[in-house]
Length: 103
Image (cartoon, rainbow, N blue to C red; front, side, top):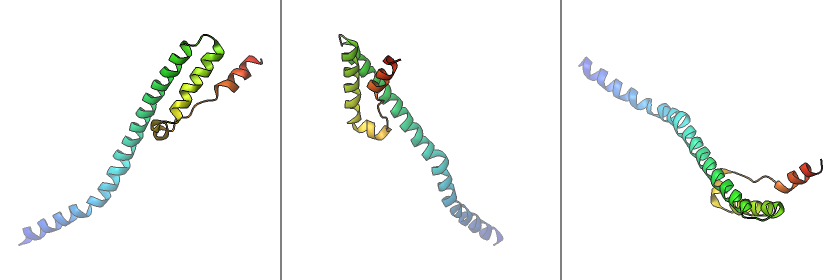
């Protein structure tokens, strides 16, 4: 009779630990995994966009047209859904260029 009571108590105790274990599971495993997935997606998207911008700049005959081509290809990226998911934003190239050339 005493063994039956012990078995019932142990099964009830494991059910009571399910809630805190689920919270810990989401906190320490699922949330960091989502962060790593977003980081990987952002890194891949950044590589792809920079390769497209470099390709557009390489085809231009002058430096000014290369800047315009790179900026246009980067602006196309801002309209894509991947840009919204990853949160990547482009840098203003032309003000940086003018600041460097005025030295």
